[in-house]
Image 1 (cartoon, rainbow, N blue to C red):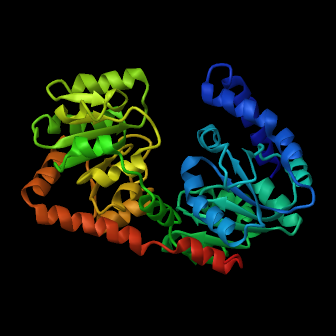
Image 2 (image 1 turned 45 degrees about the vertical axis):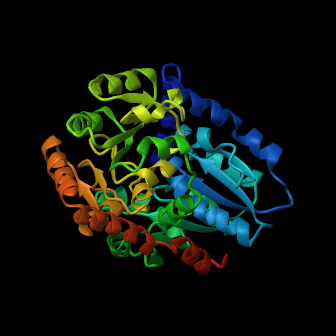
Image 3 (image 1 turned 180 degrees about the vertical axis):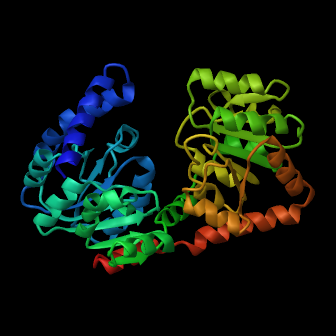
Length: 409
């Protein structure tokens, strides 16, 4: 692992150089300078901690149901939450469900020793794709139980290559791996790892909880006014250039757009595409003026998971870029979900497609054909929505099963 550790040092150096030009890298460098001061100031030396590590915000949402169930059942437990990415830490650094929140140090032997000597870890939980060999080895040497939660493994990962045997050894340090699908379990078995359970995705528990606690928004309710409504969540320009032209020909449908990025340039670009429809930004809307519009642009964060409840069809963005965003947030409200072709890495999207609750869009033509079908056949629309909602509900219970198997139920 000498080469791996050297690579981590080089990576850390590259991040410092990138921080001169890149805001995200700058946040990462600033956050890393504070890691050990946060730990030294906030750690209770007489206590042990359950450590949850998530790369970013999406992975945190997968671990969150476990954290909050532990709080409810074992309020005496202390929680350490770490992130790798600024997009997770900057949003959740004030999360009240954890006693301490900070970045994870770069995975060097020195950082691992210092980290584990600063705070006493009782159990460690690494969410989805997080596999840091030096940390795993350090935890194992101290006899600390380590669990992988909601993980997915694929044939092209280094673990399963002939030249990746040294890296694959890191997986042997897990006491148990809770994976999402059968293929992951089979891949792990092929390299001699059998302490594996198929439990699915903890996000199903999370979206059900969020849906149950979803907020009512009087402005949006008045905007929709009982009309058929299409909601585009976390959309990117490549998504918008497909669905906006379609709905220019459907004035009887309300359109809600919640773009992934809400900077002024992107908002202006969306508005330019909407010429011919009556649009308004949420920040400019009120109960008095909203009724005259047929398109609402959500120019703030934090509302999308509740807004889906007002929709009849949902489009989830990202499928023409880095990958689709969370399809379960919309599906839980019994509405069909549409998304672009980059969905192969997302098990829930694949299963929703099989159940006819999720649908892949490859171009403007395929979008038009599908939505025309739903508009002309309300029964088919309702059936697809029910299939989506039933899938989410059937996937629930993962968090309780995991806690039961590790003795924290």
